[in-house]
Image (cartoon, rainbow, N blue to C red; front, side, top):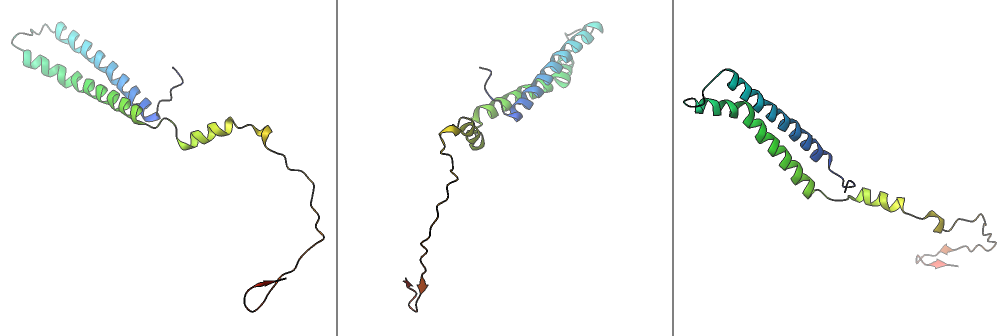
Length: 125
């Protein structure tokens, strides 16, 4: 479950989404305490109160949702493995003991044939 690889950009978008979500919650609680502390009645001032919430907290909520959605989409449609990681995995599982070792025997040849080329570009022994 924890072995899934998350692309770096998705991780950054998730972190930004979390930060903005925390800021949104903090902003909403601050606005609520501000309105409650000032004794501003909601009735008659509905537009002003809703506008205050939307201007100070709503946009950050929308950004948090957008960043999270973009990170999720990027994670879903990113390739699972790349060619480079597949090659690394293949090399890490390669069994080097099965490769035949080179021997230090040298093959000596006393017989050397010489060839010449005649006018017709044919090899002649």
